Image (tube, rainbow over all chains, first blue to last red; front, side, top):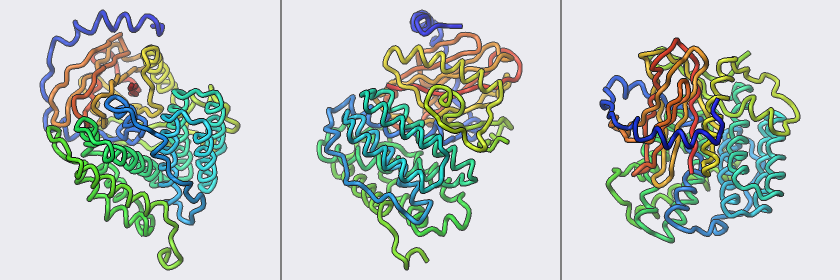
Length: 272
Length: 161
């Protein structure tokens, strides 16, 4: 058993020796066998925020949004907004704003209760309050993701597997809205290149397309299926291309439009 | 009854995605267990504990562990490939650890076109990790290989900073 103190030393000792051989490129068959799994293939908003912190000093508080409704009739809309709130929680943690973390945590619990998720999710939400009280920011980042995973687990137990992807999608769209909005206002080429993510929306789209027919009839889900390709095209630029400020603004506008749709309550006519 | 979805790979291997499961429940104030909590196998529990042990070492250097992880049934000569989507500028460690029938693992990183990406490596019997900082944001492919041993359950997770 390696202790946490011994491993870094061994890493330093072994790193140079093991990198000598360069494996052959993957074959077409191997590339075709690549698995895409929600729990590791979709990055958390915190990873994007960490990357932006490397090239800029964002004023995270400027990215807050007004409180969103915490009652929706559609379970799909609740799941999407839960994801969005998780992203809001990451902003509050980046801003090291305990009160905002608590406010967001309260909304997360309120929405989670609408999905009738398990008590363990509620307990997670309560622990967010505790960690915020103690200013444990790094722990809070892990706790927010754990809360999101707990919600997903609970949805799976309710045989609502389709909603799981919507939680991830809501978090990713809100994260993209936040980051692209800041970059659009404080443009640098290095920051703009962070927005490249050609595969994430494709993965999300595939999951939306795989939803049961009834779930796909949800007006919001149908709208997302129709509108996501626009955002996918905007974040699918080649790795050697740098988006212009106009390009970044387009990402921000598209993601903001999607978030507005996600947070807007449907009227009676649309529900039909 | 286990209700966590299983993803059947083209290689006939089984991947299982998981969020928090038992480890978090043991350390945080969970007041009630889910009615139908997925029950990880002993091999999965052992593999994840081993992977978390390695991840714990990186946390001393400021790396934050993702809560998400996957389990895969791995056999020698039949590697598993997982897509991850990363951000340039961040540093990442991808950590794999397997249950006891596995004797030696390797983790290798490729770009979206399948070209090898040089990384720092850590290999210790049934624990292995690869660390690097992507030059561009986007998809990368993590290959987990069992170099020696019998069919085993492997856990993959990652840390970043």
